[in-house]
Length: 543
Image (cartoon, rainbow, N blue to C red; front, top):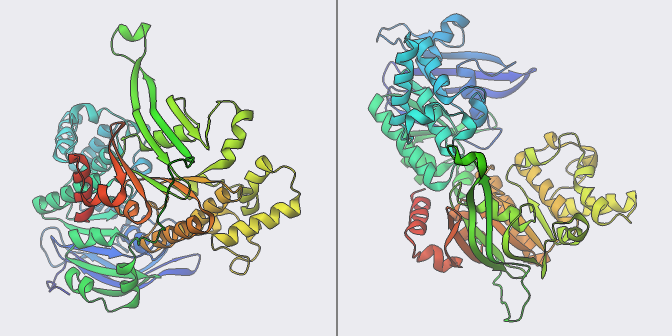
């Protein structure tokens, strides 16, 4: 552990957090020096985010005890305890001396106000700037965080920005008053590898420029390795190990730390031998998807413009094979997947099991049994009002209406057992609701829902990007086992190069709707030819 000054910027002692009398953080101690970067790591539910929120008393209905002393901004000996000072005094500290970047900017930003207005509000409230000066400072902040056309983007609403731009806007808001301490809660989790690298470098540059301390909340150990000075590892509300990043990563002492470090995707897929006359499960030739857009000026009154999301895409997936589709947000990956599922109008040829989508519900019903989908976020893709039995068995009601209630229940339990969920683990499993399960367990429910109709092909849309590293490894292992046992084919949509390397047989690289490069995964990732592929692979290696 690095040497700490006698008067740290923040000194947390005996922090305990409970909800309804049940403790979730148990007597946590840590200190942060001025200008230092401390990472708090652990899986979901370990207490990381609750710890950070409790420092600013933002955890609703939480019972918080202990102390969190913030040193005097003027360099005096008097430190203020964030957990006991009056709410009015704490409001003056939030945003000004301690700022926070929340995990999901789309929910943290107000959808009803422009990004610029939300940043300007902070400057007017804490710095006393006039509306005009605040707007000018806002544009400069957006420019400092690397957002192109900052004046125009300041007038944009959150939904009009990309994921990376929204995160940059959140960073600009957090840094508006030049805080002494920045709490960054999973600031790069949902971002592409190249954007993640940009955001990380931006945070490091701004941290050096302003000399602020950073408390980084994350489950991404590669992020910690690149960014932090010290690391504290949390498990079940306890800090089980802490020290300098190099020391902890090179010689972890606690079993939980070793488990986190060892949790990276591992390749365990069978080779696929495809005969020349083998019928592909999915094949596309010259696939094209476009959207109508408004044209500027008077011309837009008479005719719509066109945005091409996917252009001239060719690919095929053989039985038992995984085709990985990799690229940044906006590259056309998800549009390609939606077209493959028959959910978007498209041009060109697209065949599922030798048949094309008829864009007619009755004709397409048989194809929907062949091809199922697992979405990125299981919490939003599973209805909170439906039980496990209703969710998993829903496909049988559509595709096997001849089955009775007892048969459907038996098939549902079999599908759940296949993905590692049983009534022995979860009594009354079929009567439970999604909120009663962890993120990894919910993703298993989503996979069971897709498997119950015995499909030939699963479309996996970022199936692990919302999961912790240990859970990600488990889910990938499950998908690999199911592929071997059932002969499943996968269309794997992801921005994670390491997931592609672990799962895919073939890979195509997309940018701006076009396929730039494709072929066997080893050849494309180990010897990329296109500059964009080289950039993606290099960004992944940096992690």
